[in-house]
Length: 108
Image (cartoon, rainbow, N blue to C red):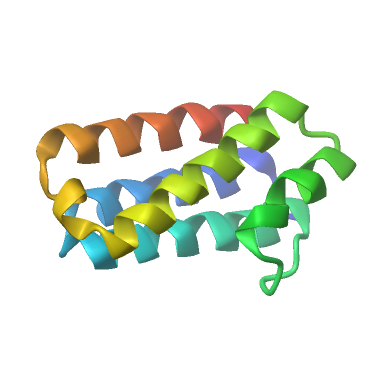
């Protein structure tokens, strides 16, 4: 597993880029991929594990239940944005997504 600081910085860079760039549907896909890669690099979670199971996987590895479950809720929202991209088109939603990701990256 990668050291926490390095993996977190890489995650934040990818998330910042994903939220700021591209069409909303692609941004949502890139956010999910960034988290998936981070969880594999930092926590050893296999890439094929569905995001609905990330909370359970993280709790087994010592992440607090509230942080693990918040990541699952965030991914539920990201999935929703992938299929309702008109909601992600506003700066407000993109800013909120970035803030949620940033807060979670500090906890996980």
